[in-house]
Length: 356
Image 1 (tube, helix red, strand yellow):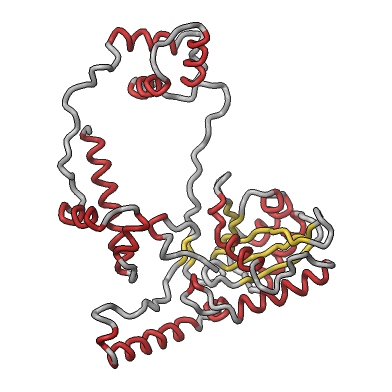
Image 2 (cartoon, one colour):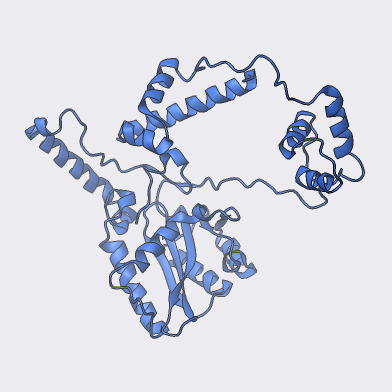
């Protein structure tokens, strides 16, 4: 392994150690952290002893005997950069050469040599795939970051659906706005956003609304409404479904209620009545696992801090009365949590799991 590779590996190990330390500080068990990361506890102990440094393994000091000779490398570069092949990726090149009865190197070898020579650029007239940054929004209080989406509600007629539009406050998990419509339209979503902002008294700029890339989310009417209200837009990366996982968790909770009409709704009025009851239950009665089992409305109003402090005191008194039952372990973590990330990193996912 070269110097650059060793440095990258060392930096990666240090990053993992930082995540582990943070997870343990939040009350996670070490064996569970290792299970999520795919590491053994012995490996973690060794990395700690080395402080994230090298693990002393040495790579080969001589080049492989079967590597291409300098003259073969020159011939390969001449072929792949010829007028016939210069606009084609290596996968196309090796197939066309095979049809001509020629073999100069494997696809992987061509890629490796082009990368080493600084020639591994996009070789087609089409626009290369653009990297998409992960949405990095974080909420530290209600009315800072909302997520929303649309889901189907079945009717008694097969193939026909009603559409549930729903806005959720990410910090509190409260369902702040919803509507059931007979069609999917940016007009419905724009109107609901405006009504929800009015109901939640969002008057200052700073609210971010996140959604996926559907036409009701990115349509001109919806974007114009957001601009008029001073609301910033955020969208999931194309093809990445878990960028809006919080909404998906709400919809899963909704459709797995024991009182959900499995055969479908008789009318749009019945669907609206049912969703209204669900939202009331979800906000006022449901103890949400993602916010330490308080209700979304309690967290939205700021009442959860006192409730969680009372729980922590109760557990501490129980431990003091029967210390032998705890065997040196810390009491359950009832910390409120100061922020919620829209897309938590993988090593924190088990702590921020939003199993609504």
